[in-house]
Amino acid sequence: MAEIFELFPTPVMRIPALLSAEAALALSERLSLAASVANQRSPQLSHTRILRPGEDTALDAVVGQIGPHLQAFGQLLFGESLRWLVKEMWVNVLQHGGSQSLHNHANCFASGVLYLSPCDASACTRFSRPLGGAEFVFRNTHASMETGPFNADKWNAPLPAPGDLILFPSYLLHEVPVNLGGERVTLAFNAIPDRLDAWGYGVGFEP
Ligand SMILES: [Fe+2]
Image: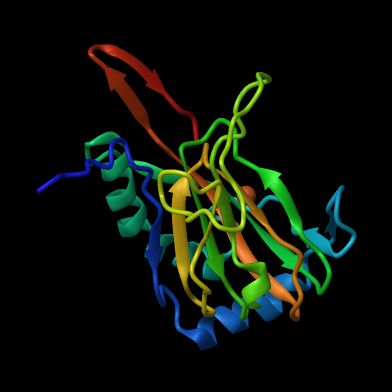
């Protein structure tokens, strides 16, 4: 019997119903009104300013609910129960026809998306394999090949319901394809551990 070892996988954690749908929709209604920062690439996408813990009681309660899951996710990433901190949050409001281009989040370690509104199937968060260097690229991609975990370029997160949370390593490239449905509201955030230690070579991170 042949065995296949899936080496060095990337964790993406989904927490269904972190918030009740009612609580998520209430946050969506209130916070989407504050999304006044235009996205540079998509006119149908806007954001709130960066929100920090301590600014909004309801958001602080949400951060409190995220905490144990973030802690568990961090343990998967670094093999130790570190002290994790949600550093900043922002709300994204994506209208019909808008999209979020491919990006990752610099200078942090874990990122998350809490879905506050319903999300059309066209606009599920989509993760991508690294794009690679500037060299020539060889691929075998055509209609009759079978896509699997060892050759897929992209992976769509499951269709979320309001209140669902997804956590992923901040280096992982992600995007939102063109939204063919109604308004899609999410709370995104970045988190850092207080300190990492590689055999005595420690680095600390400021909140
Ligand atoms: Fe992002």
